Length: 289
Image 1 (cartoon, rainbow, N blue to C red):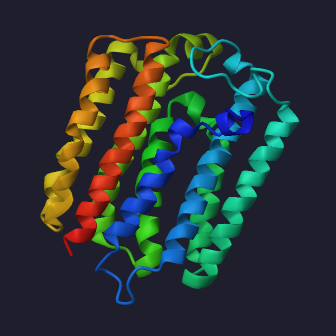
Image 2: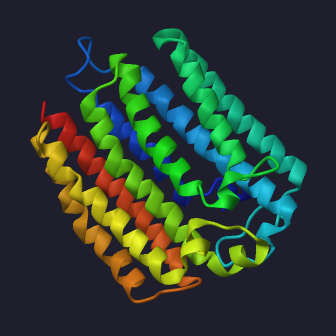
């Protein structure tokens, strides 16, 4: 695989795709002018570019700090010697500029409030591992993911269509955010030994192996538990329950105590669950109108 594609961490990209798809579906029937597909595409570009910006920034910051020198998961660009720190920093800048360009286009069409949201999202992505006191090192990464890849991305994708906040978009953001957070939790579960050695105090490091597995299970279960509430407004949201079999395999691996390289498979399975759940939920939301 091309090193820059690998460095963008494709397994994490569903966390950017799913909220845009679900948020756009939540906007169906809420906007008098219908769905604007160019706005949906622009929102997708923004979300993907911010995710890739965050991933490259994480690669750069962890690489120069030496955090990624001992790791179980896929190799990183800087730590693995696949690219220099300056090259990865430039890739980070390019991804940020792409996000800014697409965001500016949306802001001209919708309103300047989107500039504030976009700037906050980029800042959150940067300070996750960047700056003198990165909050990802202090155990706040899960909060960032739920807020920005759950609430902000889902509600924002609906907002660019309706130009107002809607209750159904806020409700749909909850399961989306929980699944995105589960992706980070399993990633950090895998990295407990190396993160502890490097001083990275993630939630997984703070909780320990067993409670982190409980947290992962609770996040997945919470996403499915939210569906009946959404069904009160959009009955076909229950279609996402068909994703339960996809959740079974990572559930079993987590319960069985899979560790190390085995958790890379759980990461991939959680990513697949995000996509399947998100697609089914989006279909259900759209056809319920």
